[in-house]
Image (cartoon, rainbow, N blue to C red; front, side, top):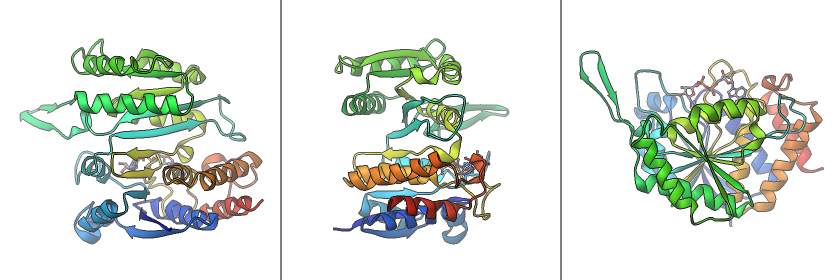
Length: 334
Ligand code: NAI
């Protein structure tokens, strides 16, 4: 049976990394029928909407999407297509595995952690008001339902993958009500998983610990904004944004996308690193039950990076996006 997957190439480097990823997945021999749809700034210009109804309908029908990055203007303009997608399909868990890659030299060799970022509320709830001239309120929303399910997702993942510790990060010393409630609910959920240790750390201390000793972390769970920032920080620990994948998971729909954005500085040059989207595709294949295909792809990516001959510019190489994708396709058949 073929898999029907919505493919959103997105903006900037999105189409380049999406085309490369599509080519590699097709070479894997997994039977995918791609339904190509638009979202983001390009879509706004083409359809008058950053997230047109046809894209939403396609995702509704297929329930799985692979998505390139979409551009969101800073301080003005349309609401982020990502935020809208997460709200529309209630994609409450953003899952971001961050692993050291053999052959990619960084300050640390043994990073292996997974971030569970609450994806639907916090300061991303979109509740902003100018209540009087020069006074803005941005409201942070913390609900029991959203906190309980992200905590459960983190602990379930830890239990399934044999991980030993979940670290919850917060700022409950200052935001005693909001972050205090998040912490309280995570503690309650943790009681159902006695074999997994719960560790608590204030978000600023977490950032310091991550840049000095990241290998002490295993599974991390936190609210939306902290998770967004910590994801990029962690990408820096293992070689940059070109390497770190992600998944946005809900009850019905799952959307797989890299942590990175549309990288305007590289767009159209054919030099972006598609690894992050390729690794997101590995997560997608696991989600689809294509376990051996996902593992073959992961192995091929790691082999090409470990050999170090063919690399994109972000990792100090000169290969184009396409040459790198071709090297992975060649590695698949070794
Ligand atoms: P960014 O992640 O696009 O880029 C930061 C820098 O990292 C780039 O300038 C580039 O040099 C490097 N980089 C990122 N991805 C790379 C790759 N695959 N290969 C090689 N180098 C790579 O972050 P920025 O500049 O903050 O955001 C640009 C736009 O992307 C914004 O409009 C933002 O809203 C959007 N964005 C979208 C996301 C999504 O659709 N999931 C996620 C993050 C940002």
